[in-house]
Length: 158
Image (cartoon, rainbow, N blue to C red):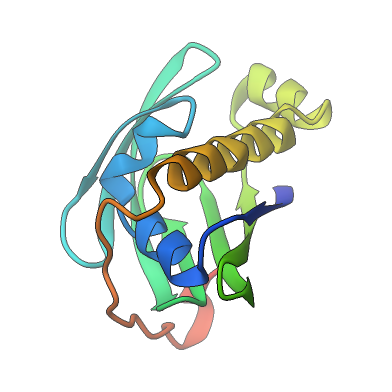
């Protein structure tokens, strides 16, 4: 499995960063390769992505979510991946976001891309675009402040 950890500091309060991150259907506005995200219910999402010219669809499940702290997920269909994004208050107007993702590359192109760090660069670039997106707006497009508790046993987050 490939593993990625990337961090970005934002000039917005932690609540603003967290609230925007919970607006999954807005991800195509700042994540390259994400064509569409549909939120099916509070914990299930359907994704359409284009990775290195290969279109894929898959579903994910939010396994843990706590306002202003973390959002964790795992795939339930399609590509194998899981991750957690954590939110850290730096002061009243600044925050830090850290993304930790584990995924299983499929095929020669994804294995080669992972080996040369393309996936790390993509996540870093996506976080920079998130930074530009939320700092330019100054406020989130929405926000979901509910809690999702982690599942006991082997279904937890990354």
